Image (cartoon, rainbow, N blue to C red; front, side):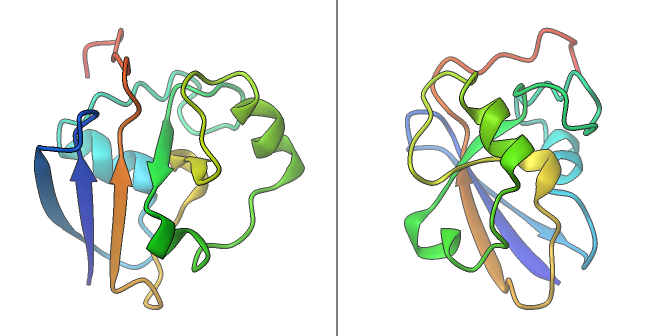
Length: 111
């Protein structure tokens, strides 16, 4: 099991959940009540599941595809360690993963 730490946009609130290998970060965050819309349901067609990965964890993830990087260009509050949560899958190599929801994130679908 991998621990996923979800930080609130202001960085003060922290929720930690357990995730199984192969689970997608978008699904984990939505199940935890995080405000990630995921409008395209993980089909790599939007940027509403944008998260900011901690600098310590970012280099342990596989590189973003060119398609993902193009969609991140459309997201608000992008940083050097931004990723789309629909493209991050938990592996055994990630014993802990810390992500922050960007400021201004809203789930307009009410999930």
